[in-house]
Amino acid sequence: MRCQFQAVLLVTCLGVLGCSGESGTVATPQSAPAASVPATTAPATSAPATPGTASPTSTVLTERDSGREATVRGAGLSIRLGHGWVWQEPRVLGGSVRLNQVNYIVDPGYTEWIVAPVRAGTATVHIQGLPKTTGAAKDVTFSFHVN
Image 1 (spheres, rainbow, N blue to C red):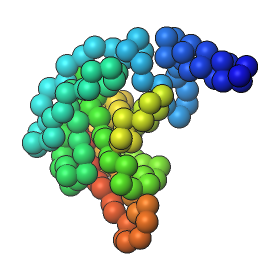
Image 2 (cartoon, rainbow, N blue to C red; image 1 turned 120 degrees about the horizontal axis):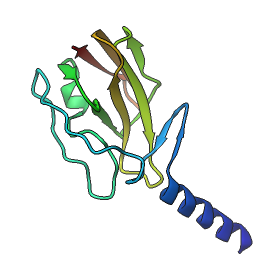
Image 3 (tube, rainbow, N blue to C red; image 1 turned 30 degrees about the horizontal axis):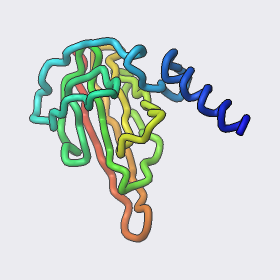
Image 4 (cartoon, rainbow, N blue to C red; image 1 turned 90 degrees about the horizontal axis):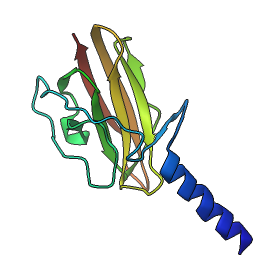
């Protein structure tokens, strides 16, 4: 019983205070800046952040948007990939963007990275998904421009 209480207390503290680390952030309403992101250069799936989540971006790219180009401004944008795959660590080619993985306390049903602008230029992000059961691997690629 004592261990359960400590685990609940730890999760509660993390949810109230928020956390950040080298591998990403724990998304909490207190840890995310409110910002608006302009539309991308190519149509992207625009999904508003679900109430109770802290995605600071309004533009969301998914597997369906693979191969598209987007312009990154302000707070950046999000890449959300479904849990039907085991997503490998993203490879970023070019130094104009940085990816930060969002680590949720409660699983939202997808893996998310925030694409943040670093400097003017271009970058390409490759992420490979391995099937959870059987089948071929799936690759998604996004190209980004930072002005």
